[in-house]
Image 1 (cartoon, helix red, strand yellow):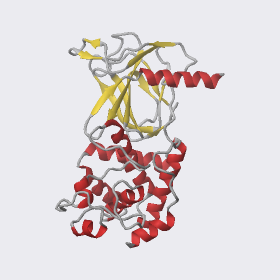
Image 2 (cartoon, rainbow, N blue to C red; image 1 turned 45 degrees about the vertical axis):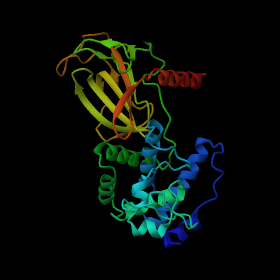
Image 3 (spheres, rainbow, N blue to C red; image 1 turned 30 degrees about the vertical axis):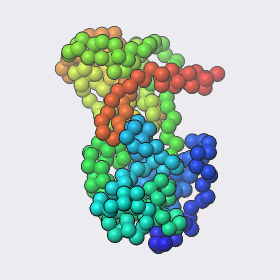
Image 4 (cartoon, helix red, strand yellow; image 1 turned 180 degrees about the vertical axis):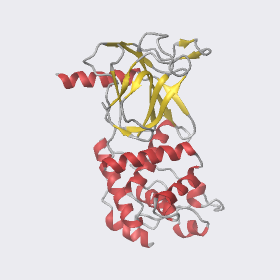
Length: 325
């Protein structure tokens, strides 16, 4: 039993039986306990571990080439990294032989095994990997880059860090309808419709028609990832939330004061207003009726694709009408 194993065993709480039904709140409580315990042992900030886990748990939900998590921790360490690339036994759970072959796997719960499906073992193994680079932010980023080898992944994880560090909690999945429901607006499912301007393409979003100047609000807790002009979308803004989802707001009449790339926004926060900008060089406007183009894009750790936002918009809209009653 390693020193890490002894310490981690002192802090962990008994888990409920795997496979039992747990609420999101219960899962987040268990995750937070694990993150805080790992921070106590390794000095890697809890929100760093939470951000890696949040990124990976959402990747696992969108990929079929990664096994589904058996516990509450979503981090997946590939067998060759867990056991060691030169290890002839890629299913090795012996901490001593794993260490001999330079694998990442560690016995985190003191049972004498380095189990890649055990929450404590996985989390402490990844924390120990980051610890080998240092505990300050810049060295942690280097460790993340060496592990993922993908700028986009590092950007998403560091964005999650900002959110978790600021709010000190994991439940940042609340949403708001993008325009206040007290205004007149209309929309229908237009995702996938044909578009001709700028070449034949499909419509990757839902158009919400409203008058010029109607407020546009953030739909989520997130980080502003993009702000500025696009010849298709005009004045547009992109926000990345903690589920690796990119929320795209286009054809804006303008932006709310003070918004900057890298800034944190919250559900319902003013980000701009409805307009008809786009389909030309910067400043072009009025080529179509004023409306908000709203799109959603998901990152799966390899690539990003659009999906139909209409069902989500309906859910958020209904929730806001219920609040008014």
